[in-house]
Image (cartoon, rainbow, N blue to C red; front, side, top):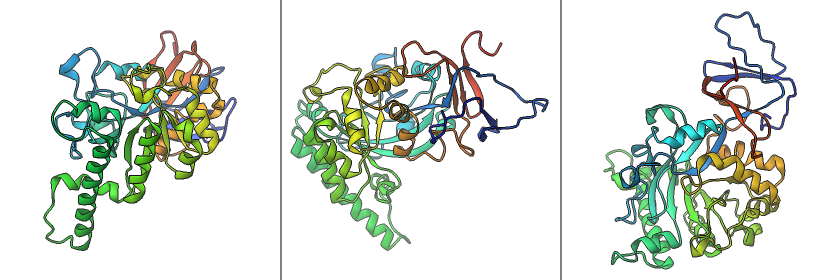
Length: 379
């Protein structure tokens, strides 16, 4: 399954120097020095899976407060914060991801703040975050609705209403846009401001605002503000997206749907359902599936896609929702998401369809290196 529109039965993949060199009917000289040959006959060979929205390494497992760096929840607008400064690749979730065949994730700050900071797209195997980066910054996190309201309601300061959340974001974007325009007009001798510098790739449309939205009204507010400032936006969670599927599709904003394995433990997720991804996809929206780890565990990503398929998402679209679609949404489709010549050598071998419960991950390859293999495989 190349996730590039082709399925090769009995085909081969040539990996060299961390890249995919060829896919399909590839002639390989098996006598070539330093060549490793993997026989995957009878199994599924796919691109590494991708998670489009999570907090791996920034909300560490097993470490409580000491390992929780997800939300700087005493200051509501913090665009200058960078997720890469808090993501710990030694978090146990990284090994879980690798064993599930998840080779790339977009990770970053949580949703307690109106503006939380910068997300990054990273690989899932290594000890130094700088060596794992695919794209950073990759998005600017913003949040609407219940989370900022609840976080700041007891602090005696804004925001405590949805009006304030939207107003504070507009005020920040208004100032940042003025800064961006003035710098473009007179770059020589311009006095830079650390806070507003972080918004430049957003106004250049190199990265989107990554909007935490669950309810219909919050989805529309995010779209309204993105349109006002002419910004790219992704609708993360989009839990009530199935109620306004045509409007979401018409907006052109991608939806990163989930975490539907989680409980409906907040008012704004009362209409959360596995059917959302399928309804949005059939309406014409570009969708990806998320676990929102650690809200749902990262290795449940393919099962979340499977549940969406069970609830109406077409089978192939379920696979796309955890491979090429998140790569496109996160702006890294030139590197990951499908098996095509020139892309990163991130390959997974499964015993069957990864969206099925009893399918096993047999081997995970990242950048051409075997980083996991099931005991007994390749012996």
